[in-house]
Image (tube, rainbow, N blue to C red; front, side, top):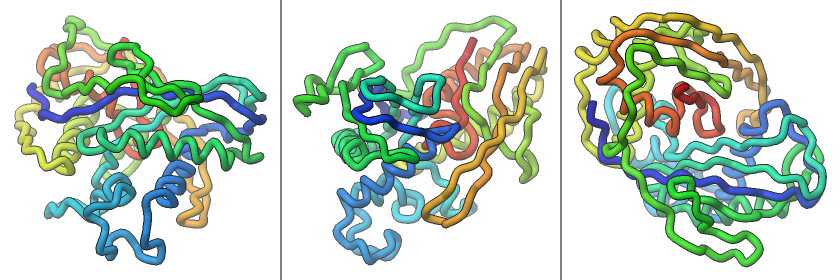
Length: 309
């Protein structure tokens, strides 16, 4: 299977705590929420307007990142909230939920398509969050440096606030993947929210995985005005032939408070290992790119992350 010609970058931003920071059980949501607020404060010039009605929405970085589905894409058959944001943010912390002064942590950041050019805005928003504080006690932090994971080079220095290079742009279309033979094991590292018949499921078939990956990549192509028309029928028929060899998936429940919606939201999902057996040759590019793009719902704050074992 050939994937669309979508560019993306894969960065790791390293931070240093300047004050103790207390995070909830899954900090990705808090990080993503703080980032959205910081980016809006930075970019929005008409704060009394909602993005959809704003006359500047086609040139505003915040709208391009967070309101892409409402502003830039009109596709029959999809609800507005179906369209993915063009980034994936996965903060990684030590096991403890509390960071002390000078403790280090990092955030993996994937920017997709047109969002690649907005990397400086992401950096500035992270700086803003660090100054205002995050977590239950508004703990402060600063950027140490940023590493381009494509070539393991430092391309941004935090103390000097200087870019030291240009991120290497990767292309979904050009990915080379080693064939694992007739056995494939996936480890889901963060809660993964996939629906089957409109209900969240802990049972993952290979067909359901491929269906969700196809949908995500298709929508990422659409918001970047890229034509990509996979053969859904043939691909899903082939996916049905792949069998589950062993499943050790388990449900992980957690919740976050949404400031925007003013309510607590349950965001549980499955985690763990699952092994499949069959002929994976035609699916490998899609499965490989899913390690970067994640799968399921709420990918922007790190849900749906998996790796190929």
